[in-house]
Image (cartoon, rainbow, N blue to C red; front, side):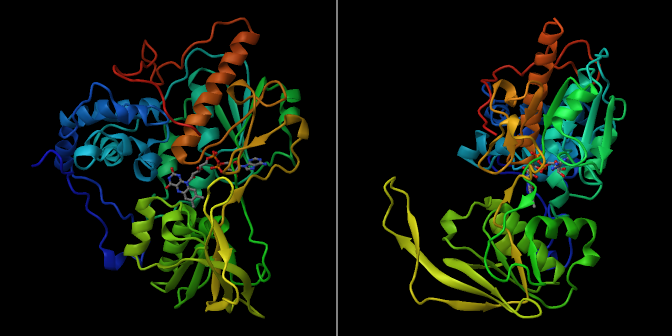
Length: 475
Ligand SMILES: Cc1cc2nc3c(=O)[nH]c(=O)nc-3n(C[C@H](O)[C@H](O)[C@H](O)COP(=O)(O)OP(=O)(O)OC[C@H]3O[C@@H](n4cnc5c(N)ncnc54)[C@H](O)[C@@H]3O)c2cc1C
């Protein structure tokens, strides 16, 4: 086999995809995984590791798979990645973008090999805490940032309590459609955590039931706020309250948790407003939910401005999503429920003072797109109601609150805040916040800060692999 060609990943048949929520990517067989692992060039300078926000040793597990040591590959994967079962199907694989093979052929299928490591290797391992530390830490928000921080601090030996407003854990992971992620994947990951001193308190909302400061007053020595950006941004146009209008996050959550409450599987005419990954997930899910019904994605700019990943865009094309570009929503029409979306045409105007392309509405260009369902997917914002202004949150461009001091500490001593733009970015942010919290507590109690120990109780903390040149990611 040509080293520059990837061992093909079998996919769900294209004509059947839109009728069910089955995982699109089929797993490698053991022999296919071995062949793909053997393609890895074992670079002296591993750009794959450098490109990974949590510095997964992909080069290391690739070679182990190539040598048929799946147990070793699973253990190496899980050593730095406590949500590996989720990430082996959903990660946007920044490692593959940076893989040197990308320049010569097709990058190694690193994400898919992670899945093979967990499926063929012994992956029901248990994490163990290091020597117990007495300082209790609270984490607010059980998304990937909060979970990663809790795991990291738990492995360091801290007792951690994670507070979560929803009745379930995982944050936005719960909105990822089932054609990308299986229902029990997060539980599979969390099962490995059972020996860590981590307590989950679900159904309790910060700003209502407690605040970061009240948690400090209760005796927690540090608090991490990892509440993400979980409130849907609205369009603010007439008709947004009509029956038949959904916002993407609650729509996708309901799709996974309570699909019976959503619209019936009849022929539907759905319009999704937006052009990011969440919009594509909503459109592709709506097409499945309506049994192959008519789904249009309306965007006020052109294809080149879409923020969705190539994987999502081509998935949408394959599955028959119709793209309607250069249309700006003006009103959602209907009396009892949605009957149409009123839009205006847009076009590019002259560049602004900063040289950026501008967009303007074409005069007298209104038209109506008939539809019975509208899904609004125009971004998310954080819900920080009830949080004290003294925390001095700043907000990331994608909405989550952050602390502005060293290690994301907020203006209140001992309270930290962070989040991330993808699962792995959020995990990396949680990991860094955990290290900062541990260093803060070590200083406060006169201890020397230490690296995170081996999470399986090994003698030495994990070292970064040879050739690693330093992380390149930003949250
Ligand atoms: C539809 C969709 C699909 C996605 N697909 C992918 C994908 O395929 N791959 C990928 O890498 N990324 C994907 N993402 C992005 C990824 O899920 C997010 O970047 C990531 O979850 C952010 O993690 P976080 O921990 O910062 O925030 P969140 O995941 O939002 O978690 C925050 C948690 O805090 C809780 N919370 C909020 N307010 C409070 C409060 N006041 N008190 C207590 N708890 C609170 C929330 O309920 C939530 O559990 C997707 C996102 C969406 C919406």
